[in-house]
Length: 347
View (cartoon, rainbow, N blue to C red):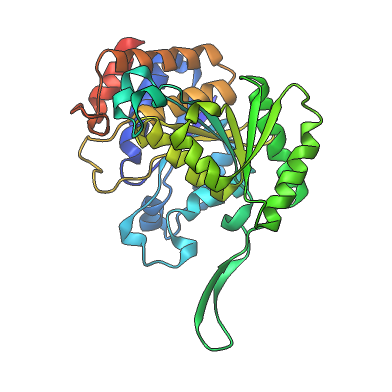
């Protein structure tokens, strides 16, 4: 099975390298790899953040393991050439519409959460985020008003098929867990959210065993802090999911701990940590690779049909943490490579 390695920018190459070491230890010769440039690194090399050869590799591979994109030297570029457009382009080209972001607190990290330990220990949820619609893909631009003032606009829109497709993913995810699904929207003020809520209710008829709850996004943000244990699976749109999943990461101890999977209808996926490229610490050996290692485990489970190997990696991460492995974001001083060593030793 072929894995496309797209390390990207900043700390991306460092964390992907550690995930590759763990995959090699667990899967041996069962996996092969090809590496390509993406993001700012690709722009500086080729003039585009998603070169044709990188996209071709991603399309040909069985799965994609992605590092991070983001380069301050590219901030002044026109939007179409900025590093972040690479991930949007991959999502569109590969049809990656469903983003799964599990958030659970490893017991050893209770003191690292922004929440009181007794509240943080209850965190165990999956956020299912729609990836192909909303303001990220709607009509956008800059224009002048009738009075000559500058105005930016980003159109939020969903059609009912997009909503139904992600709703089914949310319900199926809940069926495999505690059978509780919370649909997050802003239906009190947004027509897009009213359609979202209507369609989710329609889809719920196919899943009578799942308890469905609706919640406005502002309340959901508050409940993630006040009582995160009330959530099992959250399904929501692109913008709200982006914000809530980052919030959940800090409730769980560190943004360096959360993996993610972006899947298409056939189960092919792109797997990446949810943290950014962190250019301020790039090349210093300070990055936490555990989110990328856990993303590799998700890749084995969801796209490559190797759930036992995924379990081995996740158990090893837990053992490494229980043994005291801590990178700087977790209050320790271990290097990126040392964190990888700790997981390998725990396998």
